[in-house]
Amino acid sequence: ESFTRTLAQGTRLLNAAITRSRENRSTTLTGETAFELHDTFGFPVELTVEAARDAGLTVDEDRFAALLAEQQRRAKAGGKAKTAEALRRQDAYRELSARHGRTDFVGYDRLDAEAAVLGLISDGTVVPGADQGSTLELVLDRSPFYAESGGQVGDTGTIRTANGALLEVLDTKPGLEGFHVHTVRVAEGEIRTGEQAEALVDGARREAVARSHSATHVLHAMLRRTLGDHARQHGSLVDAGRLRFDFAHFSAVDRPQLAAIETLVNDSLLADPEVRVWHASRAEAEAAGATALFGEKYGDHVRIVDIGDFSRELCGGTHIGHGSNAGPVRILGEASIGSNLRRIEALTGRDALDYYDTERRLLEELSTLLGTRPQDAPDALRKRLDTLASAERELGRLREAELRDRAQQLAASARTVAGGRIVTEKVTGLGPGELRTLAHHTTGLLEAGHAVVVLGTEYDGKALLAAAVTRSLHDTGTDASRILIPAARTVGGGAGGKGPVASAGGRRTEALDEALTIAAQDAARVLDQ
Image (cartoon, rainbow, N blue to C red):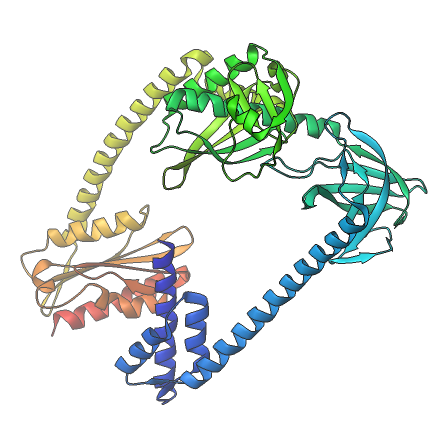
């Protein structure tokens, strides 16, 4: 649908350019036009050349080629700049890592740590310091901040230096393996390499992320239990209060299945299973039945997370201590993300409770509006909708009967001119569709000979026109739109539609009477031919 819209827009632009070239007595379509069609609307230049040739024009292909080459040069330069910055950043990481070694991550056991500032990186370059308001990357010798990995987002928090500078930690990511890089904003003071600092993780956010991570493991286990062992994880996002889980499956998981999986997950968490972390060799972990996740890299010595007796996975992320600490899990839905790949999104902990509260409030509001108890709201709403549908059908029937009565009155007012009869009338209380229907019904009553009906009304701040011709007149090659074109210009619009019925509209409501007069004159000329 998007491509069709884009193609239609490009076609309009091309037709307008061809028209301008003809008006200017030019035999060439500009290279700028061909490039815009190619760059904005995806038109192959061959298509533009062919359309121009059909219109008797040529395309300035040399100018098109020059513009395309210039765009490619700019794109290449921009890509090189980004690549160069990324390479500089990696070089800075390697330099600091070679000088200081891996980051000592202490975040599994604590949320704060005394640390030394080993390096500062700005725009991919190692710098000695930064002032208030600066945003840059910072490396510590030891850090409680978890670096984004395995689908789990990086930690945020604060770093305060010994000289009083305050830094907001916006994100934490691995620069190289075992090397944590903190994206920080200097909120107060100034920061210098070599200073001592106190690093503090945002504990509430970390805990919310840990709840989501443990819930992800449980969801994985329950999906495999419900759908089969093939439903293995193929990616995830573990964030504060929410999770996204990708898994292999060959069909959609319907709402009843999702509800059953959600119940299994919450029942498993309510049983309060212990979350246990242990370390072993890769071979020992695999022999113990630990699940290795798709796309993840593992060393010879691995970290294993057990949840109760139903989940055992290789995992480097942070977790809660017991299942009940995860709080409820609310599955929002699932969808396809590729061939035989599905995605579930869910809320956890406080976010899940807030969602339940929102649903409860909506149900209470709905039941109040319906004047019934919450548990009776669905039946009450269903009855109201059935009643409404019945009333709308009856209203439609009455409206149709009213339109036919008005058509009888309009047909009776038809005036005879050379070649047939004409009805022109300004009506009220009709929308665009009803105006066309009334014009059509009226011509149906005038089928004894050639006749034209033109109606006008004001609707939603616009002047609307509708024209209809009898079947016998249409068979002679007369479309209704032919009669409306000059009248449409009068109200500031255009006419549309092919066949015996056409419509038009414009913003000049004050010109509606004049437009009807013009349409009546054009109708008389058509009938007199």
